[in-house]
Image 1 (cartoon, one colour):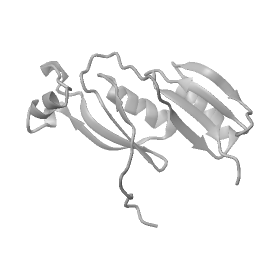
Image 2 (cartoon, one colour):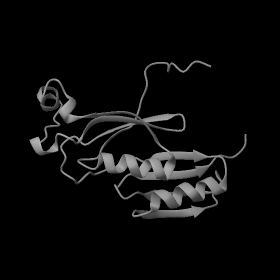
Image 3 (tube, helix red, strand yellow):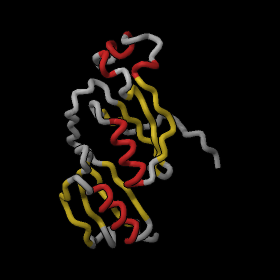
Image 4 (cartoon, helix red, strand yellow):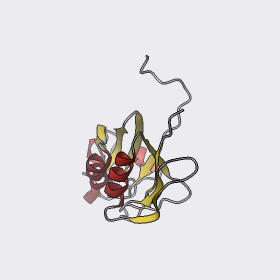
Amino acid sequence: MSTTPSFPVVQSYLNLNGRCEEALEFYKKAVGAEVEMLLRFKDNPDKGKQADQEGCGHAPADENKVMHSSFRVGNTTVMASDCECTGAPKFEGFSLALSVLTEAEADKYFNALGDGGKVTMPLSKTFWSPKFGMVADRFGIHWMIMVCQPQ
């Protein structure tokens, strides 16, 4: 099986406005995320030119903040950054869906992601899944956790 994706590829990119590194550490513990790449603003050889073009300007005090990162959860890559470093990210109109094989895994990830967050739908049996629930984590990112039914 090839690891080269076919193109085009759509990936989630989270703008955590100054809380990216905190979020990466949280996702490592909550869902076993593996950080594959992390680039800080101070590492940018253009020193602001590219960030200003992309609308992601930052103050000199934010040099150690994350300009770009990517992390894996299972077979999925998610990208994230601090961008404007305002500390007030807003995530509306989408959710990250986390599919697992067992009800025990659903409980584990749901509880871990809900630590410091807000449950919007408790885990329960649905007609499409033996266990499904929704939670907004401490960063405001909405997650749907579901157990995949055997085909």
